Figure (cartoon, helix red, strand yellow):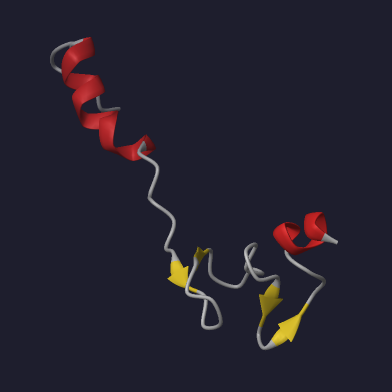
Length: 65
């Protein structure tokens, strides 16, 4: 059975593990209708459209009515 020859220090262990838990930035895409940035495969929150379909009215227009 393999046994380590020396104890690995906490700093050396943590240096090795540090990059495994970094969060990746989400890929943002521009909405084809209004140009606002949104997450891919999700409805645009500013113009309430997805894949050419409109789902309700944006919040700014609802408050005016």
